Length: 117
Length: 115
Image 1: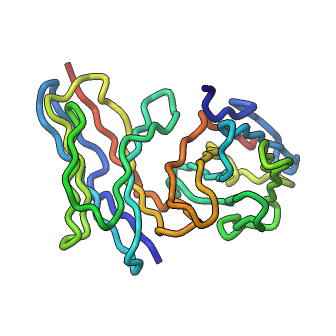
Image 2 (image 1 turned 120 degrees about the horizontal axis):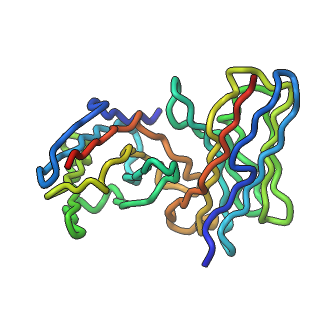
């Protein structure tokens, strides 16, 4: 079946603008994760959705970052008033894991490369 | 807090050489999971292996092998008879053994295999 897909693949924006990044997880996967990969910080966890539970937002770097997951499937990561330090590759992953079940493996999408000018 | 250290940043080998990528982790959890991912130049993270903390058996998959040692908190990855297609960035990652399974990654090791 299809893997995790993300759009757009590349996004260039001006400082101060808002951006939305989209993630389509693997069909049937209940858990969805956002990570950020930047030169200085490596790969960092941002946010995690698991079924109908409240998301774990502990990795979001500021209140300019938010994410939602509609209908338990597609997720959108929104960055408001973008700054140059937000430039990075934003990676989405999904896994089959359900609450109380053994950990399952996260499969990653190709990422969205965000450049803030 | 969880931490993953990949002390090697860049490794360059000639094709057919064996190469070992080191990974050392820190965690207070008794149950946890360790992973290796490969990130080729195309950029997509490719899952290679998952190992739980109760399974210290080494694993071999073709030219790849993994050595998990809880006594030294290490989970090293060896590529035998390396090939140019093995050139990539390799990440070791750690996750707690619970429903919230966010990954903590090492900084990655850039492996270059020259023909």
